[in-house]
Length: 267
Image (tube, rainbow, N blue to C red):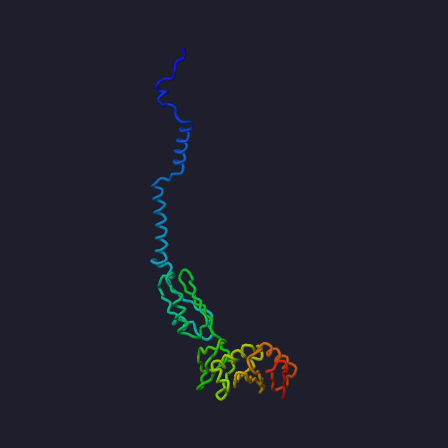
């Protein structure tokens, strides 16, 4: 007669199917990806040391400190003038140099500077890349010459007139134009006309004379004059004037105020 199940078998000795495999598998996976705590601590300490070392190198060490300043791009100004106004903090950590503050000092102290680029030159240098304003007109007063740039800004006064830069003559004191346009607006018109002249004619121009908003005259070398009229249609007038001068090279007076009907006369 076959023996029946034992008490142990009846009392729940049977385990759910697959339970041992799942338990074993989970334990294996946990063990496989678990990083020992000492190793984590070592990695964290290494990262902290790396960051701290980088901060010390940039701020606390003598490795990356300002030791020299190099200025480039100057034409009228000297590097010494630029560097004196820039006041770069020598010996300071290179990373702490305030480029915006240096730029502000230079723009405020040297109006001749149109733009300035402050560059960190690792490990020990600061570069100052200067672009100076170029005069397009001169205003004479008291034997000195005020330089005016292409925006109409009066940016510097010099004792000697730069070569190739025409004088501005504002003969508008009794002009009706002043009722509508002040002297600064007429200056802007003169700058506008000067900027639209062909290079060869611009070089030959000695005086830009403004008597009203619509009456601008150019006085050139060899006693020649050009009546430009207003500043409107400048590029067209420039092309017409170039062609007119080539067609009548011995003329002494040219009129392009109405570019569709130009004229020349005299010799």
